[in-house]
Every structure is written in structure tokens, then in C-alpha cells.
Image (tube, rainbow, N blue to C red):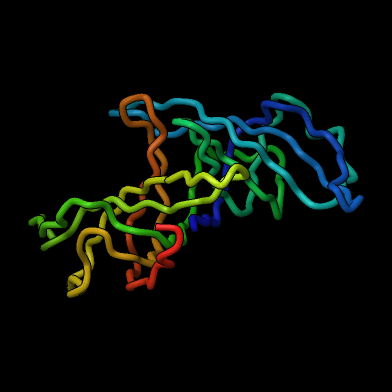
Length: 201
């Protein structure tokens, strides 16, 4: 499970469209394009598909090119080697003055990778770098795995932390491009053991 509460600032890349779901309830969709880091002093665009409940009264404002600030829950869908961003919006503000960005926090449940997690030394003390994945079952009963890179600066290392362990983590979300691929990163604020279900790991 990967869930991120975020604020996204960017421009509408796909104009708004009113729709209804399978139960006949109205919802509204549009696309956002924003920018995230892609190396030293470089940025690269990323597209996000946005959906919100109901139908806004100001539908005409959701036009391509309009700058917006959108708050909501960001999730990720993995297909083949591509990672798609979907945002369930709770609030939309037009004409923000801030620069394009994605800022927020991540909640994660998953499994650490197979590599050892050594202690590293920095100016502020020991820290740890490790990767972990969250698994998701697809419609055709296959599993896809979304990886997150974690940085943990906490002073005390949990005794249980190691390869192939279930973790539950909270922290600051950081998105970037690495080797032309979208990278999910989390600066850990809390970390605990998670009893992972044996049936899907």
C-alpha cells in the first residue's frame, strides 16, 4: 500500500470532463502537468490524472493551460515498466503564484529488498538507505511491484530492520527522475514492523 497526501501545483494538460461512475454518481476528471527534479538544477515534466467527486459549478475554468493548486490523495499504478500517477482531489485553487511542484507525505506498507541495510555515517550521525516494494494484484491475477527508496535519519535503528522484512513507514514524499525513470523517495519520520500477508509476498 502506498498512499500520499499531497499538494500539486501545475497546469491543466487535459481539459475537465464531467462523467458518471458505474453507480451513476457524477465525478469530474482532468489532467495536470507539473515538474519534478531530474538531476542538478534540472527538471522534467510529469503528468497526473485527476478525479474529483461531483461536478464543479465552474467547469469552464478547467481548461487546458490554466494554472492550478490541487490538494488530495496521490496513488500510483504500475503497468509493465511504466508508473502512472492518479490524484483523487479534495480541493482545487486557480492561479497560484508558486512554482510547479509536488509536496506531501507518504504512508507505506510493504517489504524491504533482499540487500543488507548497512549503517552509514553522515555529519549529523548514522543513517540508513534502503529500498522496499509494495505489491498489488492486477485484474488478471498477476502481481506488480512498486519500489520506494527510503532514507532514515532516526538515531535508533530497529533491531528487526533487515532484508525481506515487512515495514510500515511514514515520511516526506520526494519524486524525482533517475536514469530517465520516475523514482519514488521517502524521508522517513516513523518506521515500524509490519506483519506482511504470506499469501501475496
